[in-house]
Length: 62
Image (cartoon, rainbow, N blue to C red; front, side, top):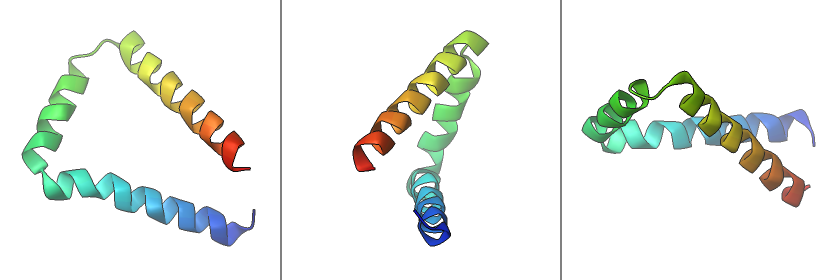
């Protein structure tokens, strides 16, 4: 993988991250209010799940 691919992946991530607040700012705000009500352990669990899912996805792509 070259550095161009990495920058392209980061650019795609920014586009995807920006879609939800652009399309539904009220829904985005409600989602973050719900996230703020979670405990640190629950947030860490979802973070760990994201890391594992991303790692498995990358393993299949490589």
